[in-house]
Length: 393
Image 1 (spheres, rainbow, N blue to C red):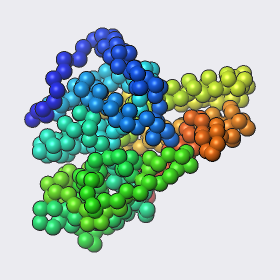
Image 2 (tube, helix red, strand yellow):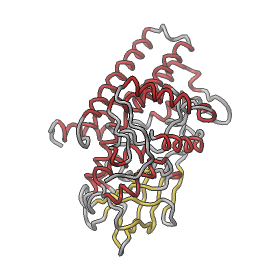
Image 3 (cartoon, rainbow, N blue to C red):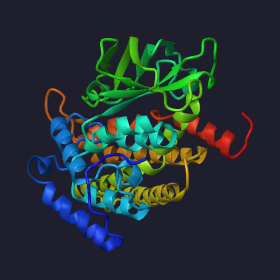
Image 4 (cartoon, rainbow, N blue to C red):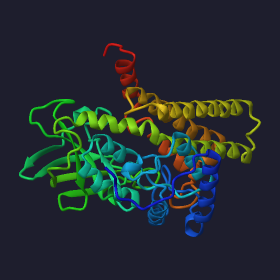
């Protein structure tokens, strides 16, 4: 099967040539309003320049930089692991705008390629490749966050349509998404991991209501989403009905594997900013802070090496991928705390009235959630203990 996609020249096989290609393209295209963003739009800063970043996605799509590592037969470029690393490194160095469809490109697409039907691939992959269809994740609920198996959102088949009722929470960017991949309970009386189904649900319909959750950073990236007799086509099940748990876990494996690469490169820039912050505040020679900066540097190298190990693994990532989530969530939270420690009392004062925060303050506040969303640290340790090390429950 081949997805119809814009024709792009084959990628250079030599990594140095590929890096030159990437640098040249980014230099020629990160200009004007794209350059003015200076890479903004990351954690705690998601609402900055959103419409400009949406247009940037379309620029990336036309140039063939979306789906870089997807197989060619699915519309991707078949980039090697090394090439994907190079792209991520140069993207961050060019201070290109923060991306707007991580859920679609890096999580849903690999899952559909692995578990979906040819018809689903034909229908959904091109929109992601063009950069004009955005996705959000319908996993967490008020009583089913890290304990995802406690999902209570229900769906039943009514003729040729699934009818969905329930509530999801922490549905990142749901208010600007076209589709949502939803884990719902489709077998009455089922419990825990059994009886769950992975559905693809359109957001633009009367049965879907999105309410913003205003965060302490001032942004509203997170949302709660209510499904009231919302509908989707009977054919839009990824995998088999009742077997959605395995599909949902495979998607989380992609989240903790290959898709973390650009994130790690972004962390490198944040660490550089933290070192520059220490110099600006005259704290660069403080022996205690220098030791903490050195520890952060060492931790980042371990993060990058683990990401490379995950990318070199064959097949769908397994439970070992929880190592990555546990490590980077804790590392990033600690970096936010280090920023505030360097700034001292100045870190407690907002940049302007009524509540304008610095990027450092936004990062610090947002990183408090890093050890919770996507599976809390406690859950990651349970997964590793029980499913990797074979320890008792």
